[in-house]
Image (cartoon, rainbow, N blue to C red):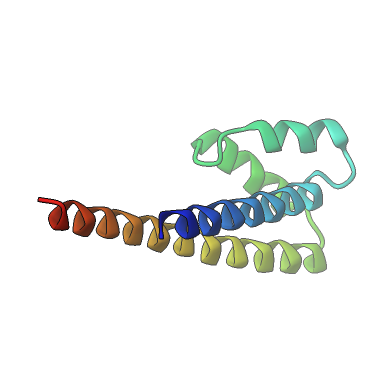
Length: 100
């Protein structure tokens, strides 16, 4: 079971990184240095989030819609990862209970 959870986790995280890379590519608007800078920043850093929002405000309506869809999809992936980790923890607790 743990192997399957691990595989699912790594697949979801790979998809999360692909979505984030696509998001930053749109936000950077062809500026490779900016794209690299945005990708290297910590996702939960307040300064990074504000910077990304500033760049998003400069996008066209079509680009903003695309970014919104990517962000929505990314949040769904994050919820799945959270649920998977919660399931793993519950599974571990049950396993420890059986081996006592």
